[in-house]
Length: 225
Image (cartoon, rainbow, N blue to C red; front, side, top):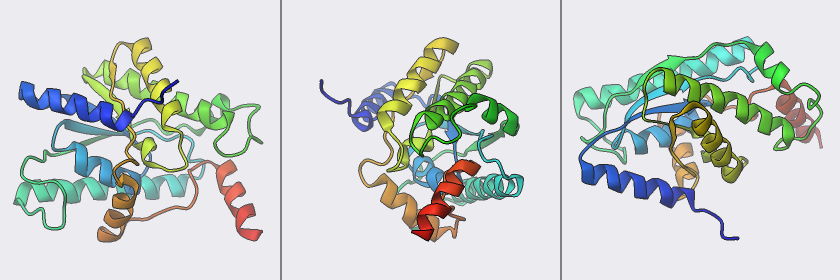
């Protein structure tokens, strides 16, 4: 069975939208500013984007607040570029559009209920699947409620995240809620490398664990080895 190249599938859709001369409304689920950096630089040329920061898996509230404020700071920087027309050092240009943000409900209990019984699973296992389902379903629900044409997630930029699993879950949640899911694999075409460059450019806070306490403890144990 041939693997789907989700990056090429996204390019096909963008080419179609360009031919039609339109900029679809896209709700982009974002996990953090570093992962968002390349995704926003790329997508803002082709979509009217609203970032949806919904991450109840970040179990430490100060950590959550730090990440959401960094997301807002990055968006403000990108919007300033659009206002001034100064895209120095950027891969996007005057076709770039301004970005809005919606902060989702921060209820850690929703995450803990979703992963109950899977707390000891290793990073990347069934616990992560449940976490993806929680965040992508809420993204689909909000996208439908607010009349977005598409939704997608920045999570596929991570080399540690399974793009096939994320795209499958996204497609399922889109069908469930009646909204289009935009395929992606943002790590392709050196997207992850570019996110690191942009993180340095904007001095973004980069964390070394996904967000939940379980992943933090696993990372701490790995450091001690």
